[in-house]
Amino acid sequence: MKFTSVPVRPTLMALSVLAVLAAPSARADQAASIEAARQTTLSLIEVLVESGVLTRDKADAILKQAEQRAAQAVAAKPAGAGTLQATHETGGTGTGARPVIRVPYLSEAARTQLRNEVREEVLAQARQERWGVPNAPSWIDRVRIEGDIRYRYQKDRPSSDNTPADDYVAALFSGTGGLTRAADFMGYEAVTIDGADYALASGNTQKARSRERLRARLAVSAKVSDEVGAGFRLTTGSATDRVSTNQTLGQDFNKYQVFLDRAFLRLDPNEYVTLQAGRIPNPWFGTEMVWSENLNFEGVAASARWFNEDRTAVPFATVGWFPIREQRPGERGGRSLIGAQVGAQLEPTSRTKVKLGLAYYRYQNLEGREDNGYYVESNGGSVADPIVYGRHEYGRNLRQKGNTLFQTNPADLTPVWGLAYKFEPMVLTASAEFMHFAPFSLMVSAEYAKNLGFDAADFRRRAGSAFAGVNPGGKDDGYIMKAAFGWPEVTDLGHWQLTTSYRHIGSDAVLDAFNDSDLGLGGTNLEGYTLGFNLGLARQTMLGVRYLAGRTIDSPLNNLTNAQSKAKYQVNTLQVDLNVRF
Image (tube, rainbow, N blue to C red; front, side):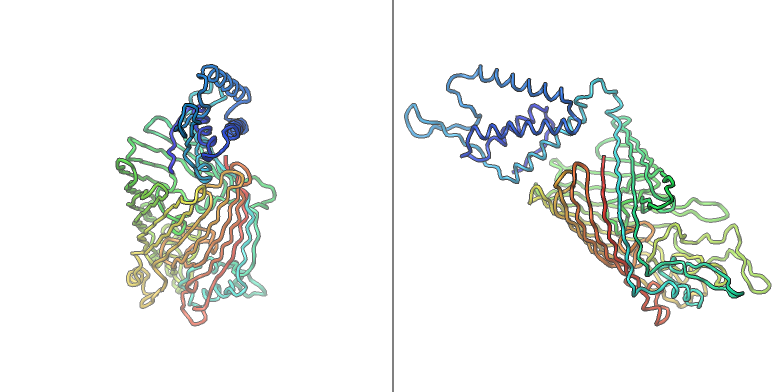
């Protein structure tokens, strides 16, 4: 049985609860059912008081009014009338036959679902109409404030069999390190000891790390009119890490920085079209394999939807343009992302929802090229041109790890890394929700990505003579599969949800700068799984535990020698979260 939510007054909602809960079966005792309904209604009103949407005086007034109406109804009832509204049939013959009351049977799952729906409708209407808040200013109707605070314990345990960071630095100085998939593992500090120069590896590939981390976010959105809206969000994090909003504790009690994470305008000229501009929420339907859940986009996006009569099939289309780097004439070219996605939301049955999407993304001017921005001295050495040198770099503050990189500059200068391949990923995404287990749901999703810009010949044309005949290797596709079972959202005490996923993402399937930063500590060239459990401790308060195990697919050192072909990196991560939303 499907129940359709419709806005009603609180009194009518209470009567709906009475009508359903007063008749659990045709044989239930009438007096007991009415008493159960009465207790349920009292509990519902108490929840409203505890939630702050009703004052105690308002609740007492509602109960008093209900008692007065009940007394009036009893006084006006004709003698001999039944005490329960239902379908009556005469049992047996004769004038004194006892009426038979037939009440539709509702399963426990259906009654639970109805209770939840009625409760959410009451709370939503109470907030909207500001029950218990007399003479509230009009702007409250147009402004919404929400946020969350999360405290996390995280432990990252790399495998003791991982290739040491010293091997990455040795590959760099041996002349075979001009290609890599983990440039940051090649980081080093130059020191001089007894007149001799040494390069000490600064990367970490084998040591475990434990951290306590905090995330705080506060979002404000305003409905200026029916067609115009605006919003912004503040968050903790780093100015150079777009895929994480965590602040690591242990900074000598120094205060945290807060950043403008979102700031956007939204236009809804009608129900079919939405336009957004500024620093906007992710407009694409997808998974963390391509876009981190913490990522926001800078630029403009437009979405269109079409509805059929019963809205069981809703096709949609989204296009967007997003600048990544500003152009500086005479110094460096601009970089940008363009994208388009088409898909549909389907509801084949009342208990099944499906969503499909096909997207194409193209990064412009992001691929690496041979860097000629330097001068050659008479002794054969190289000197960088301070104006244009490094203009083709895939910078340290942008990349994570996994994409195939090559050294764009001469070997006698500090390495500058550029992307070996262009990135034009085609991405197919599908998700489904099955609500046959009310109040629980089964949610599954899958995504496949293939980089249409993966071309070794094109790499050789851009990389220059130093890489003539070199095949940089790598893989151009990846996929992810996810499942979750339990409450659709963990919002109250006792709610729970189990989650799991498996991911296999080739080195150059998608750009590693913008995808998930948790599995394998971020990036591509990874395969692995996640297991998670979320439990509601109180209203909008959740405890979450997640275990992630990831490892590299191809050698981070690009298989240039036999020893380097065996390089690997594996890390297991435990995350324990306490999250409160408001």
